[in-house]
Image 1 (spheres, rainbow, N blue to C red):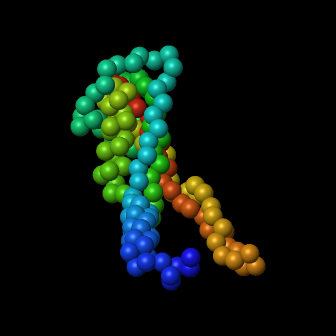
Image 2 (cartoon, rainbow, N blue to C red):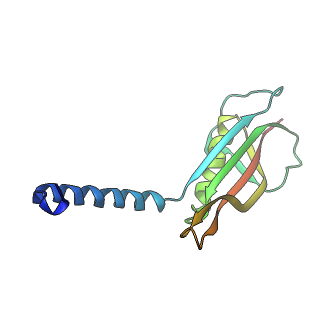
Image 3 (cartoon, rainbow, N blue to C red):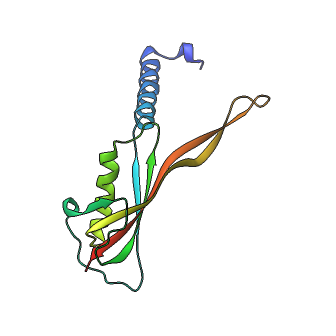
Amino acid sequence: MPAHDAPWSTRFKLSLLAGGLTAALLALSGCATVDAQTTAYVGVEHPAPTLASEVVVLRTEPLRPHVRLGEVLIDASVDPAPPIAKVEEKLRDEAAKLGGDAVVVVYDHIQPVGAYVNGPLWARDVETIEGRKLKGIVIKYR
């Protein structure tokens, strides 16, 4: 049966479903993201978790004696970019899980993280997807 012969209620339900799916895709594509991966180093102490609110984010290695506990890798979206406070909060949360007193950011760059092909077969363009990559070393003061 062609779509124009379907009862109005079926067409109405299909249009509602299509509208809902479109709205969901738009909502998901507009979200800023911050993902983290934490790795504890082998052969070092594994202290109890600390409070994230007490973890300090540093840009240079402190002079105070410390032990390196592990590292945190952050993947963040660029368009839209999350607030820097959200990125730092994620760093603190992950460092606290390892029992760190601070996290030293050693790498912070925007770089290509993927690509996609856009356009018809005879005129394709390759578009890159950029992302923000951060690496922090979790430390515990002695």
